[in-house]
Length: 108
Image 1 (cartoon, one colour):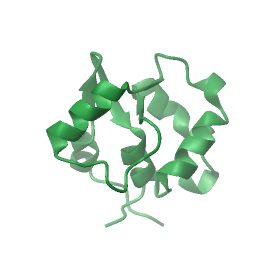
Image 2 (cartoon, one colour; image 1 turned 120 degrees about the horizontal axis):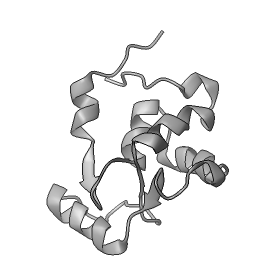
Image 3 (cartoon, one colour; image 1 turned 45 degrees about the vertical axis):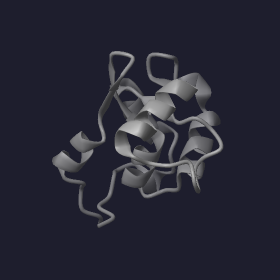
Image 4 (cartoon, rainbow, N blue to C red; image 1 turned 180 degrees about the vertical axis):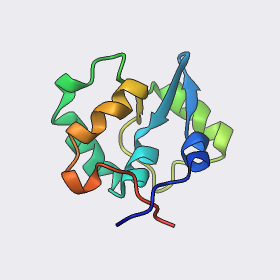
């Protein structure tokens, strides 16, 4: 059985974007132990479960601002802008991810 992720680690991934406390798709995928591509595929197959107040895609400017703030580059990056999930969106994830991925696990 996998250990739960420490609260501090989760809190470090919470950002304020558009006035909402959100977590980005890559951070959530890591917490759930899946690749971001597979995570987003599961979400996009179930878009009807994620209205705008559950999830939204970052704008190019928002993405660039985050990259600048955290000092990350585009090399080896993504093709698509990241999704941001509100608390309601995060709560919806277990209904779209495979059962083995319902609880975040400690990867470290």
